[in-house]
Length: 200
Image 1 (cartoon, rainbow, N blue to C red):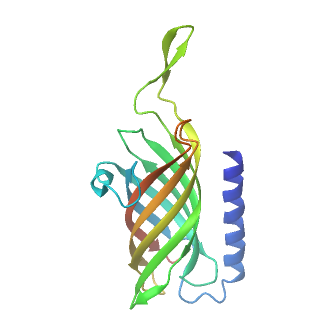
Image 2: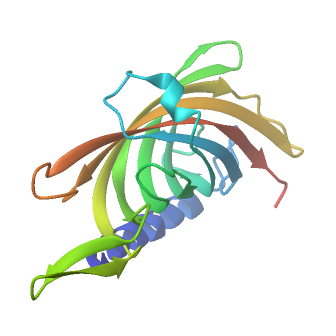
Image 3: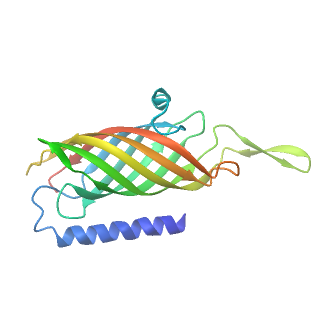
């Protein structure tokens, strides 16, 4: 986990440095919006069983900075709490690079890829066998590296005043070291939210 957090901090510092260097040329984007989202989670193959996502609602908060002084290339930083009674609740932190080409007047699409870390709890007390007896290990889970890959779209119209950019996304989480039988497990998130751009 330490190496993952260090990589994310380095990425954040580099993005901040880049954004400060470009601050004079930015004319259609403001760094560090407040990103608020609802996250609908499922342990499922991508684009399968969408209904199961809506049984598990989580919330997210984050921010982002431009990598080129504009809206179409950004580095995102997210913290998400996932509620899932079936496989256990979890916290997920991630950083992703996102490309957002415009496809019409004020409408964008999004492709993103990054690195994350998920801390998942057991849905019920886990049992381990010790000296021929089953004993409770509690609900304490474990941390696992993730590779988040996402697609999305949204509305973006820049303003010198504060403005809001709504978005909708679909994300695949490739979770590593899930268990001995399945070293990599796919999980999915349907995401909807707002990027609030204050006048800092």
